[in-house]
Length: 293
Image (cartoon, rainbow, N blue to C red; front, side, top):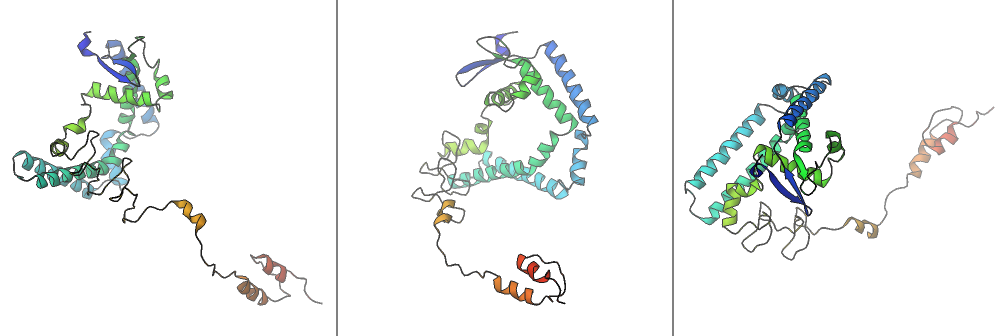
């Protein structure tokens, strides 16, 4: 195995290395897949090829959503073609179309969110995930000690919510599937916005003054919250944001009726010699009095 086949990465000051799966690891990974697939089928999971039919029956996908998805793809492809062919001649047009592309990608992501989440719940999806997690345990090593970061699949699952586990999964996905790191930098709209000086080093959208903005041009602070020109927090209606604890200091006139008068009227209408169920304490005391005579 040559060193070129390995990939090193650093996380929180510590070095790790990803090595391609050897024959033994590949065979074991397939066993993990088969076991997970069988278990998922026994527990009633559907197959990936049946997913669209299942989503349509559940009302999660229909011809309308499919048409919307296809139209968004066509629209984005048309904008990209016109940009690359030099159709747009002004920086303002380039900015506008780049923002449109960003919005389209967001709409596509939202449209496919439910579909993608359900895909991972199919028998195939669950089995794929287990194989992926196993390969993390078999292929990622502490560079200094040359020992696996995770001693078993169970060990990984127990620590899967940690920052290190999440980083290992991200790095291994990039390694195994040939995904580019910081792939968003490669998107045409981001390349153009950066060329126009409208994207900062963090990949955040800015205006011509270098101030962070959202897709509609509204000013944002470093946390991504809307602000006015003076840096004060504002809401979606451009009103100043008021903290909830102001409720404790609000003053107002209490003009609400206490309800006693209406309660007494109801009580007087109940005959004294007849027992009736009542909800209030006062009513109960009146209607349950001993009959006269």
